[in-house]
Image 1 (cartoon, rainbow, N blue to C red):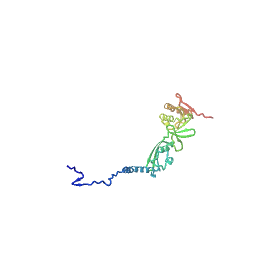
Image 2 (image 1 turned 30 degrees about the vertical axis):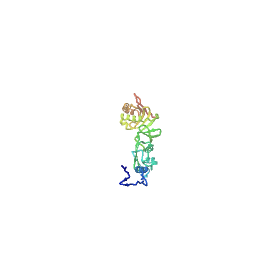
Image 3 (image 1 turned 90 degrees about the vertical axis):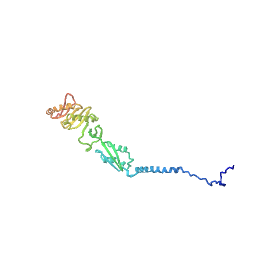
Image 4 (image 1 turned 135 degrees about the vertical axis):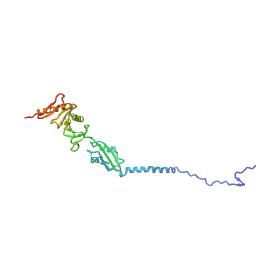
Length: 267
């Protein structure tokens, strides 16, 4: 049997042709494959970056308005003057701790709260230290808080005129807590007299000299004894006024006696 020629069918010979040129498969460049996602990423990231750059550089957000709240002794003129070097700074880049450090240089300020108000404002809310008394040391007067710390030199209009005057005699150190405590003790022992108290002089330790409008002489007292000693003095006042036309001081610091210091008129 004759083998079949696979190239011959029905007596015809199929010619074998070599392609003149091989078919080339084009491969896409990896850079082209990345170009699309990269473009999308640039769009997604570039927009926020452009916005952020605009926020940090635009004159729209330059600080130009400063508002003050809560100030009685601290006025807006002082705050604006203190923060004048910061005017024109970008509000987003403005350091609030730096602003607070500047504002707190005012001795009246106890605490500060700052709030940025777009597009160009800054609100400064202050809590002031409470004036508790006037301190007299030598010839000078100063306003002090309830911890005995000096706030500022006293000037007319700086503090309420009805503040208690605390003076330092031989003590040399301010014991404001004790001075305020003795004023409170007087209020409990003799409310009517306490309403006329104008000055507490710190002598030493627990000893004070009180100046009141209710009696025409100062009282030398010791802390913790007014509730017992003042009623005795009040009972003796008519006799004291009858016997002594003028009294320099009354000393109530001794437990079993009251010492009167009459004014002796020289002839």
